[in-house]
Length: 164
Image (cartoon, rainbow, N blue to C red; front, side, top):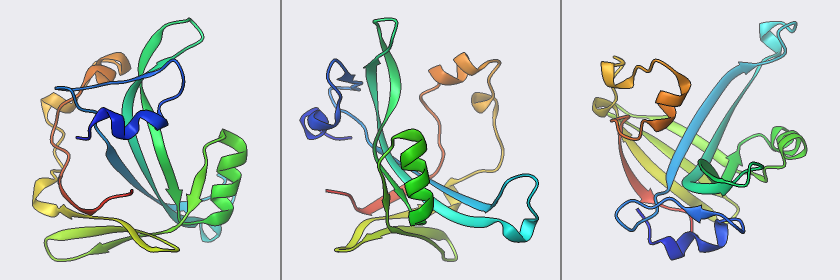
């Protein structure tokens, strides 16, 4: 949770932050892709990469003239500069090329984002808080039902250092 004024400059004109109990929320979404390649290419040509998004919820203006609750990407980071450049050209999202590592320990993983000035973000993800069973509360009859889902336990995370 963060005070809404902290994210005021990140919200596009005509949009508004989605608040819960008067606070905005920022989450980090880490993704590891292994062996990405065109379907016709052999497995040996695949590349691995990591990306880390920091995001919040906001009501953004859509072409229908209404505000719709959406995920607003605050910062996108990727550990492959060339992929970041391609993604920037194709999507318009400003990817930052940074070192992103996930280190496994006996009872946790440590996620770290490093830039030219040192560690920018670090979080511990506790293994015992992540389940492999998808309970009834995480199964949906439709995509719109899943869009309305806002609760759930996806893992215990302790953020050690956050982006400024």
